[in-house]
Image (cartoon, rainbow, N blue to C red; front, side, top):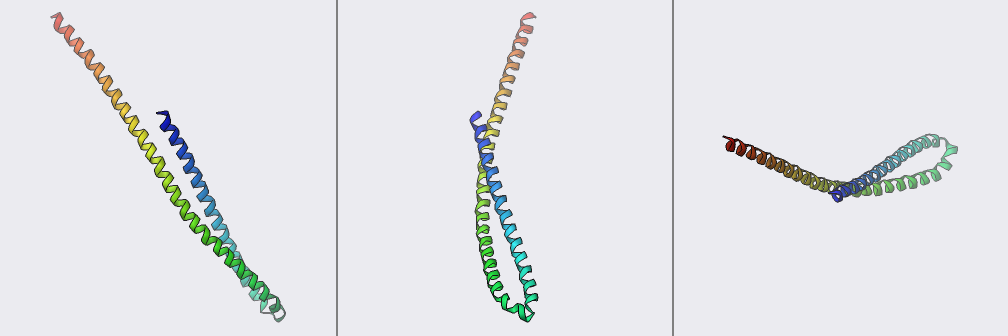
Length: 139
């Protein structure tokens, strides 16, 4: 009995760890997406400044660096998407594992309740039979 409860605790803890890992990955993805948005806004601002003839010279180097940075961020986001997908599958598998042990525990608990109820009913039946016999013998 205690072994199953221990397994349930263990698997719940593992499930919680997997959920925390998934949440961390999703936060990282959101941060990278915010960085891409900030970079896009920065590029747009630099383009406005580059309309000045003197600023055009420096804009080319900036644009190349910004494009590389954006590509790197987008690759990171794509990698995180695949990691998030794998982490979600791990969470689903861990959840099913927890459910399996919880159902096993519920079945054991139900069997014990049924056995206890049958035992109590048997004792009550025996007491009733003995009382009946005493009354019949006393007549």
